[in-house]
Image (tube, rainbow over all chains, first blue to last red; front, side, top):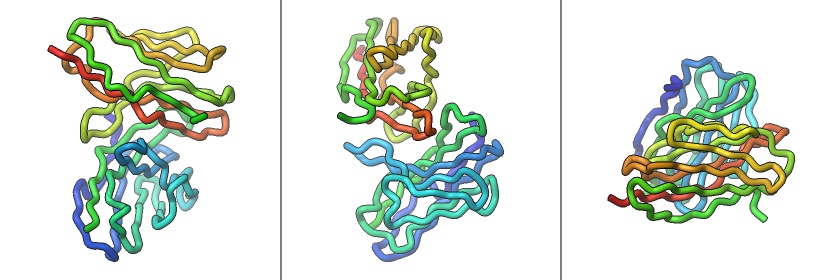
Length: 112
Length: 109
């Protein structure tokens, strides 16, 4: 299995609090992605990174920010969590030559 | 028209049967194609890549039809453990990654 881990795996928080999800990879892959998955919507891209300090927005980036200060870590931050951000968040990595994605186990976030 | 479309199912299939489902894509500038499997409350996992010449991996066969812009997945001799949601993934020439919403498969004992 691809070396990709997410933390925390589960989190319950209250509206208005900041939340940071971490994605860590041991594959030295260039591309990293954050998706959210909700019933009826499938996987939707939040942000992605194509290198250290190189990030870009996806289709549902409002309310989220990311940082990538090291190749192995890609952080997703909700500055002020809202109930609409209750979801399952998946990180994915992809090699330098493109091709398939490999996913982390997911982080289940509940915002009360 | 959506960029990638899949029949959401569910497909309810008796154990041992053969089942096939398709995924259509709208943009002819699509470069790479994959099938992923996702179990309930788990992450998507790569099942197989899809090549123009078609490819097989055990009981699974994937086909690409560029002229009609669809990919297919055939599962032979289905097992209870094949019950899952199957996602098709299309990667465009500009590297945009598009996921289908998945087809749910239930294998019945």
